[in-house]
Length: 563
Image 1 (cartoon, rainbow, N blue to C red):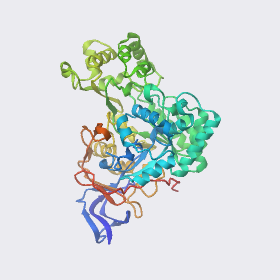
Image 2: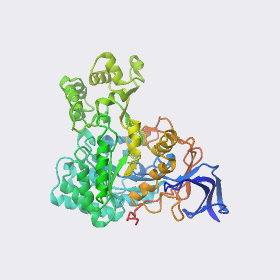
Image 3: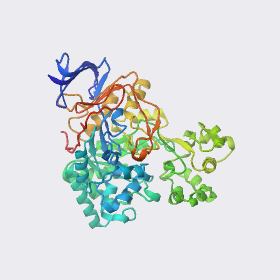
Image 4: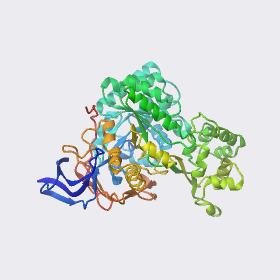
């Protein structure tokens, strides 16, 4: 007798091949059989001809802190995700010496939009080293499966301390960092993650530590992956990190390189396609490079009090340094400061993640003063043109007049759906970039998988449902060498998702207050999701609610090549 049989299912096995009708049986957490009339079980579920697929593997999350107080990795598991990869961009909380904890959290508060009060209240610092952290997670338990990167910024802070964001490392310091990376890989890291993105700044606009690494440091630390013969190098790239340079890292280490932040940029829409062409050329030379792409328009809610989307602008840096002080408002009023922003907006070849094209995709969502309510729902670009003003002047004047409390929503990238469709079909693309666990007050893209299946496969018909499921399951499993997951085959772990393909989607945004200390976050509910199982244990019921399921997730530590 099986533990579980799901019958009358339309099975999409994750391979990309055609779906088929049948049953699936689970025994001891693994898939025991697929076929017809599989026999009796302790529990039998009638799928009612809904689609049964592997659970979603989310390659780009930031649950490092949250998992220490929330084993569900809210809201990801409730959105069909059964495996999360943490530590992306190199923004981790281990290794971390006690004297660096406050600095680490303050940087995360800024760069990843996490509540400082929530982290201080929620994190139980029962770890110091990376191995300690993994052991702590495993002891606490978790609902989804978890794989963890060793984070560059944490490694750099451990070795360089307060100078981690100020200077290049010496050769002896690089050797010490290299030892930490090796220890992390031995402990079970899935790879090494870093960032060179210009927008990745910590408290007071100080660059995140990884941005200070020189080529020698990057080659040495990524080279550890080649020395141990496993793991992936993940980089969120800035303007100076070229594909040929990343190919040289792949050649040196012999390991896969995952390149994040590959979007259709309205200010330079061909850049990502030119870079993907370079990736294809590198693949032809035997270098395993991957382009990590998103299936959403990337955007976020923000106020001028914390204007994250603007912080990659070089001319915005005086405002970053003054944020939270009275000097901040003086800077926003300064005509020379504004002129610098306008000039930079017209300059090509700079690390500009905000362009003149974005004004028409910036909406006023909420206002502080009653007299400004008439502007709710309107676009900043349209309002500026109607008033005959430069958008920068209108935007900053309005924000100041509303006491920096106006809530804006801006779509930065992936706003041209026809070009995004081309991106999603790229043969060396990995669909991810949910940023789940980060930017909680700005966005919630944890439902990217439901959006891919509902919007892109069903509504737009730009990809088949079977290929959408493959992109969410077996492809990420193969890229990161996650064994026995991502496919519905005998012997694989029973990470499952049951959904209605006619309705599957993510719901509308809503704000909830369920973080430690009551801090708020944006949430999006699942639509059409009928059930989620992790290692054979049901974690989400047919009302899209989490179940009291224990902690069935596994800490994943084995990432050797699958061949």
